[in-house]
Length: 146
Ligand SMILES: [Cu+2]
Image (cartoon, rainbow, N blue to C red; front, side, top):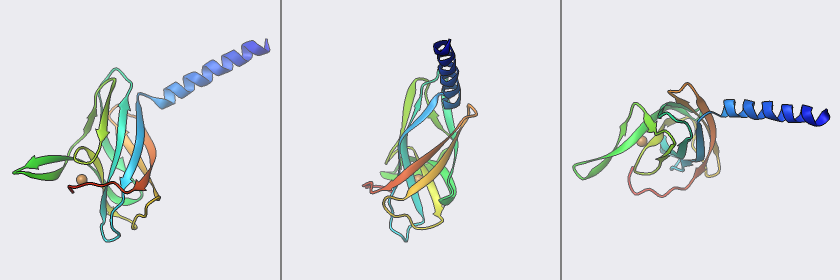
């Protein structure tokens, strides 16, 4: 009887976790360390979509900056330039990397200078109605563009 009860409890817990978790998960979020005089920086991560439908990242928010924008990098006349994008797609059963020279979340107007090892909270909103809160450590990331 006791064993049966435990089994039922485990099943319901598992279902609860699966529902709360959703299709999207975030791996390895990190914020690029910038000099104290620089007010903007980029956030990189891998976004995984375990679901059967394509999902788009629509928005990012962080208390560490006045604004957060979704950016990509394009090449124009031999120059690499950042451009805001309306969304960042994550294919069904796929993964999108936010990485230097590619998609990233741009933090604009940092509320205070970041130091290596600081942790930046970030909330990401997706078009399936889900959102993800992550904590991204500030790291030295060597980038030749930007
Ligand atoms: Cu950017």
